[in-house]
Image 1 (cartoon, helix red, strand yellow):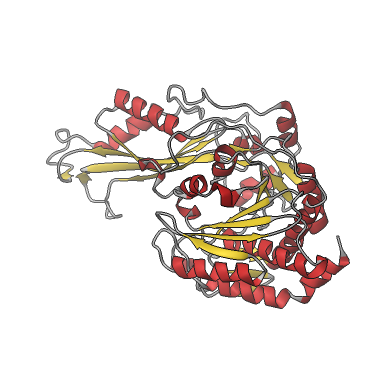
Image 2: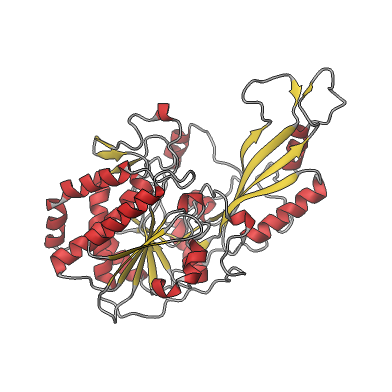
Length: 476
């Protein structure tokens, strides 16, 4: 890595940190709309401060903030993706400091959005500034897209991409989100699982009835849900919905080999979770569980009792569920399979969609992976691990499936960033290393001649306008 680049970042650390603190202090909760417009304006000003031409572009929901800068035209055109919206704060009494009054403690900055995702895409913006200062310009054309609805499942990102293809003309996408690999080392991620969220709602009498006076007379919707759920997943962990696994695309031999090389300290993982065993099935490896297989999870079970534990037969029971999807599963098809199963087993139960993101995977053979790896190694000072897919979800299908672009993830946050939880944080050394890494990735991409990078993937039908089940919170 260039000493000039390292020196520039080191000389400006205090200013970089001050800007991060100001950015995190600006709320931008997409679920409620609090501060979203102000945060979009803040992000646009940030882009302009590092030399980008910035626009705030409307969608049917929160606006997209787009920045563009020229570079050598025969070099790969890079689209950097991030999101300026954040999760709600959650229980305030569990925060050690106010979520939107960021504080630095023990080498970390604490606050909502530090790691997810303001600190990570801010590192990319400062990487552009550093390149301009040290190298006199950018080595390749760059577009930065900041999404304002990622924490809601990005319901309008595909809508935006299909209507503004000319603004997103690129050869590849680089993103930084989520934590680094288990163990804390640098990594490059080539995909994400998708997600489908839905509720199962069973109804009984028109009001909650006395469990003695009406016990054995009024039907109990809670038991109806319990019996239904038992038909949907076996005790050994297999999902029993007919057709659920039909479209699962197995990993290639090379992808499986990469997965098998990923380290994990399983006793430490179990200890941190305070459990004795992993979930069933028992014969799957740790990383295989997160990258290669879909899941069916019951998130919540409720009878609308508000914790009062009244001796009643509930009038309604609700199971909040999610399915994590892998290639080539699609949320519409899985939702239809679930509807059919419920209709056959418990026809009175309602299936209510809550939001979806499609899975995305970029193959190991896609162009530019060597440049991305070299840039990450130069920036972080360590050879990165390759992750075929993360267990979590991001709206990368918009890029791989709709725009046909390979996507390369360079997570910058620490494993214990506590994203979505109280005391979200980002280790400062990773923030500064992320600035250097972003710059080095662009430098290494600038040494390549642009080449076709289309990723073959079945596109979503329609014009990109969200369906009913794509407009809710994805809970990624």
